[in-house]
Every structure is written in structure tokens, then in C-alpha cells.
Length: 330
Image 1 (cartoon, rainbow, N blue to C red):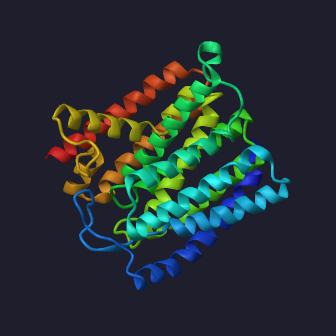
Image 2: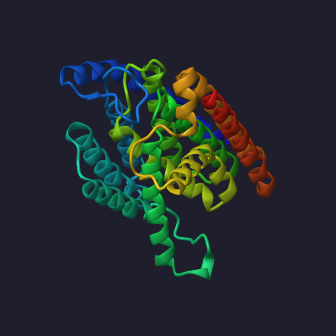
């Protein structure tokens, strides 16, 4: 545990400082080039807001990642994450600028997930119950689904920053307590956490800057990587960390499907969106922060009693969703 935090702490503060320094510079560049997120069916902001804050997060993360890889002699497995990230950043930034077709975006997402799975351990979740290639194929599809879910849930000020920092807090603590983190894992957790914290200073409601797909897509990709690595050791604990996002999105999709609505179209029907539309972004964020904090604590303290942990975590999410639904229905 001490080794993990000795590595994590200085990297986090360097990444935070660099991100906070770059954000206002980037903000002015985005304004000058008229790169704005305009109000639409899905959004809850009233005025055009610059988007692309993820560029600064990714610049800090990539710089630190390359330095870390070089310092360790470019280890083979984590090296696969570098081209995956570059593909996602490049395609997502083009999508933020000009808009790209679904086929191009999905092709990039699948290419990144295929590369990313080579960075995972060579063992199987299900042992001999299915062929290795089939399990990895399912994993790739799940990876693409998760990073798109993460992007789609970015619907109010501050939500992705809060969710990301909470998942990283849980992942970091689980890596530390299980002793399963490599130096590159610890560095990546610290770089992403520090970069996101610097961005959150400008995205806290009322937001001056939005993340953009160039941030939310690569962040979702990296979080999926951390969660999958943890799942080899603590599957239920890894599931608990993003459980609020999984539950809110899953229930909303089912409800829309039952009503025969087009589930892929933008909307404002998530639990947190309905609460934020009535009582503001900060109210919804505080409920989500309380939920995520409970999930982090549950994943840590019940990692060796995972069934109990899952029951507690599911109860926390159920209570939060019920509360947000009541708030949004007033």
C-alpha cells in the first residue's frame, strides 16, 4: 500500500497543477475557434459553452504515460494502451470539431478495445468454460459499450468529473490493498485523477468548460481498463464502483424500450437529469457523490465478503435512484 501511494501522490499533484494551468489557456483557444457545445435535447445548459477540456487532461496523461513507459523500458502490455488512446483522442476530437458518422466512431472504439485487451492479464475470467478468444471477444464488446455509456451519461455540469474521481479512488484503494497494481497502473490512475481534478475546477456548476468526446471517450476507455484488471481479483468490488452509472443508464434504457422509444436518441430522462432540471446541477451532483462515496467504501470494506458488499451497494444505489426520482417528480 505504501509503495502505491508513494508513487501516486506526487504524480497526482503534478498532473493536477499541469491540468489546472492548461485549462484557462485551452478555454481561450476554444472560444477563439468557436468550438462550443450548443444547448440541445439532451443538455441542461442554457448558453453555448466551450467544449474540449478533455484535450488538456489527455495532454497531461499522455506526457506522463510516455515518460513512465520510457522509465520502465517500454513494457509490452501497457504499451498497447498508447495507440488505443491516440486513436480515441484523434477520432473523438475530430467528432467534437466537425461531427463524424457512427460507423467511423464505432470502428475507432472497437480498434481501441481490441488493442486494450492485449494490456490485460492473459488469464480468463471463466476458466475453461469458454474459449479464450470468445471471452475476449465478449470483453471487447463490453469495453466499447462501457466507454459509450460513459460518454452518454455526461449530461450535467461536473458529473463526469465526480464519477471519474470516485471510481479512481476506489480503484486506487483496491490496487493498493490487493498489491496488484504495476507502477504504470499507479501512474495512470494518478495522472487521470490529477488531470480530471484540474478540469473539475472549470466544470463545476455553473460550468465554464465542457469535457467533449475527446475527454469522455478516452476516460471511459481507461476506467474500463482499470475495472477489468480489478475484476480478475475482486469482480464484485469492480462492479460496485460504476454501479450508479450502470443502474441509471440501464433502467432508463429499459423504460424507453418498453415505451418503444428510440433508445439511442438524446433525451433528458436519466434520474440525475430529471432531478437537475428541477433543483439544479449541484443538488443532483451531491446525491451522486453520496452514492459513489458509499460504493467506494463498500467495495473496500467488503472486498473479501463480496456477496454482502453487492447487497449493500445495490441497496445504496436503489435508495439514491428512488430519491432522485422523487426529487425529479416534484
